[in-house]
Image 1 (cartoon, rainbow, N blue to C red):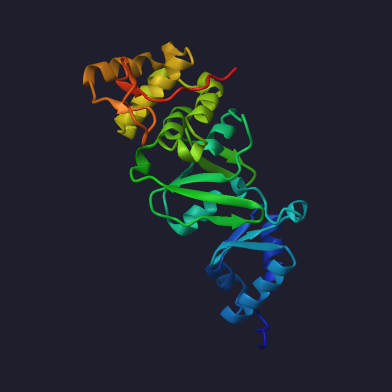
Image 2: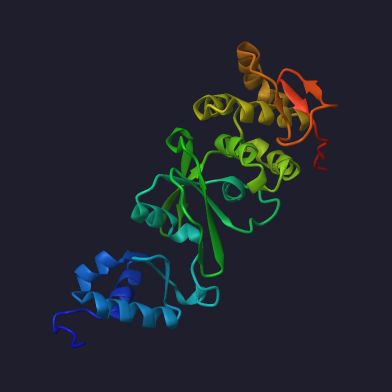
Amino acid sequence: MKQRHDSLTLPAYVDGLQQTGRYTFSRKEALEVTKLSPVALQHAARRLAQQGRLVSPRRGFYVIVPLEYKSSGAPPPSWFIDQFMNFEGHSYYVGLLSAAALHGAAHQQPQEFQVLVGVQQRPTTVGRTHIRFLHKKKITSTATVPIKTETGTMKVSSPEATALDLVRYATQSGGLNNVLTILSELAEKIDADRLLLAAQRDDNMATTQRLGFLMDQLGDKSKAQPLAAWIQAIHPRPVKLQQGRSVRRARKAVPWNILVNDTLELPE
């Protein structure tokens, strides 16, 4: 197909974006700027992808791969996650193990980049990185903080909200023993009053009860004291520490009203 004389080639467009420090663009943007036909743009994008210069997490959205990340197939998700989620039109925040690592609780490098979203979203692999999306209905009630990235900022759950989410999504966080280890490293970033506010906004009493119990196990009673007072005032129903396990021989832990039906390994 013959290219129009007033069009800009896609490689030139990509080079121009990269020179300004921008590493993402949409199909719509590229069509408007380059004046290429949809078919010509598709072919050009495919050639750049084959050369390792572009990667596409979703149809219609492209990430530019700088030379230093060519071997890994893509820059880190922090370079493009905010733009990607804006393109998708979904509320989001980086959470769980990924958020904990960003807050300094990097007990082990997360195997995937974990993002909480307000709608069901299928996972995607960008280069060597697997991005996993977890659905959270009341996502806008979660406290987040902006964290600077190489290309702008991204939304990350606050240390207090991260602690709650780690317990709520314990399976996706490596199990309660792993959560306990991460909490021991995250604790210094947690503020007791902000933790209470985060729990009240999160509105998941079972998660709050389990988190308070875990913090007690770590000997961090001062950080959990406002939670304990709130729970004592409400007096919620007892909940299992480990869901799906028998409580036949479980003991009840106060003031959390937790049925302790598992033995936890305290971090050294």
